Image 1 (cartoon, rainbow, N blue to C red):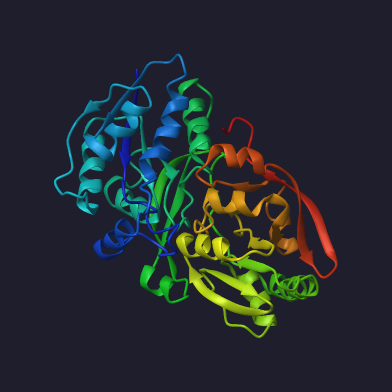
Image 2 (cartoon, rainbow, N blue to C red):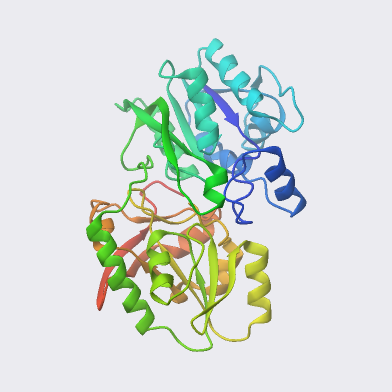
Length: 378
């Protein structure tokens, strides 16, 4: 019997689609819930567990009651063993720590948790490297190297453990950023510790890396290429990232480095918008709409990390052919053949987006590169 401990932070990633750049703190959580934000962490854990439940091996799910694990497990077809419950309503950081301590006492084979970098920090504080763990990515900030690429990739890693494959475990970095600084356009990421994680380079998310001086020069060329192809009376949704920011700077505009901005006729008409504001613009604008996004260095994600304002509804309305991917050639080469990744929180949309896409890498410089997920995902 494989004993799988499950922890869900129900509020992880709750501010992503609204452009709140995190979910830490009661004020942000209250604001997100009041604005109709989706609690997606439990559903993402459920996606992982549904795949695992199809295996013939005997699996025992051990977790806290309610939204901290039980709901996802029961919805995935398991009858979990309940070993505790949250002492706060809604659950707080102390409850996540309590769940981790309880699972340690149960001597589970693996702790599978759904959350973001803040959740990883809490689990690292309790578990350290005494217990193998694996994250189902559900947050807004995803700088740590302890997460699978997607819920389906998490299932693939667990599947290898269940079927007796020789899976290495390694100490992987837990990183987090200052959310208050993040909301002011500054990225202050720091190392917090390590967790012992099943290592699979195909399915485990890479730690985000910073750009190089050569990349910065390429970004200027990319900016000029994009400017040369801008069309009048066309709405451009410009995603977050340093590459898109250089593009806006080249137009003489001051965008929001970490938010989504809206461009029309070389002027910014909206800054740092969330999904509701984007939908409002789409409903009121009758002309063509295009999206400009970039890849996260090291990880390769183009959707689902830091730009959750682009919800599945919005991406479908814009359509694949109207999405520009811009990334320095060095950033693409650093992927070492791994595809650019989509994790939109809609598996069907992710399937629709796979394929070979043109990527603008410089001035009059484009490559064709695969976008999708890995074998076994979805």
